[in-house]
Length: 397
Image 1 (cartoon, rainbow, N blue to C red):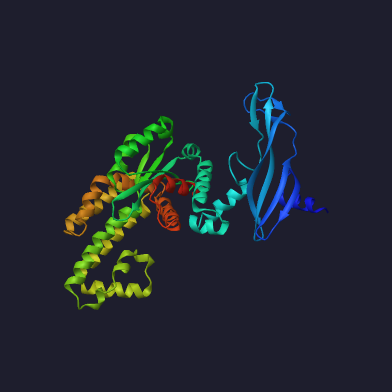
Image 2 (cartoon, rainbow, N blue to C red):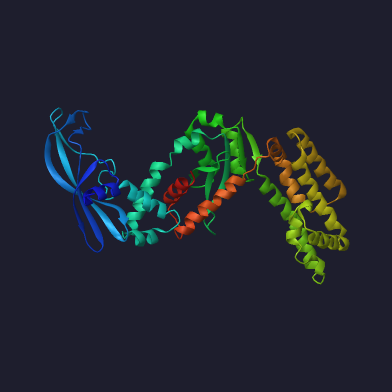
């Protein structure tokens, strides 16, 4: 096999023919030309074979071993006799006005998924700004936001802290069925969310059947305004978190007033767990604490009864009744520990009870927050919202 044929097989670019090859210590320069003899005019669509002039275009391709590969392509500028315009021929393996092939940009994009621009630039031997430009351009091509919205039926809404300590929150919209991030908004304000969903149109708003969110009032108001036909579901994680905080407040007070009692030490994570998930050792520790403080036992089992309501209710109506009975029981027994939780629960219990419809939670959204953190960690921080959005949406496919 002639060496040109060998390199043509290696390149796997059937539309070009190799004319010459130059090899030095760091670079392999492959001179080639396009096989086709005509090109369609982009203006009128008429094919032309009239060449006005030739010029060379250098494209960076994938490395061969440790050597860079440069394709020196002999390009033609055609003249269209139909509309009297000049135009350059199109390459199927590289974009116009780019100095790299499609597969080279794909390679750099894959490297940048888990590494910073600076690290990828060192590997590929280009500038970090070039890597950034290529990656963001690739992201814009593949995210296809309209298609993401078109398939959403169950919507998750959550926030992500963009800059720690600055109260700067992004709003994350997720598809709970497909487990992907649909879009990101620059803040979590009610006005921003309502305006955004209204911009998407009534068609999108009517297709949403369920909305899962946390206790942030802007999310609930937005869901009521934009998705009146949807079930609003308060995420169980956040409901239980607020419930556990009440229990933990009592534990802290107990620990502070009985510093010498070792039975209360390291009790926090035991109390957070449901009874049926505790190990034998943890059960023994819990029994010892209950003997010293009967009130702790009452509070713990009250928390367990609330879990039982969410786990075993068969319909929303029964869950609502059970929650109200639970509230009344605590009031009757004079248990004040959950007063703050009850105040919030009274206002939102119908949204908490909606959990039992199909046991849907916002866990997918919480998990995807880790994806955003990984992108920021890889980039050593990313303060530009638009760049962060492109990177995250491209990875969440």
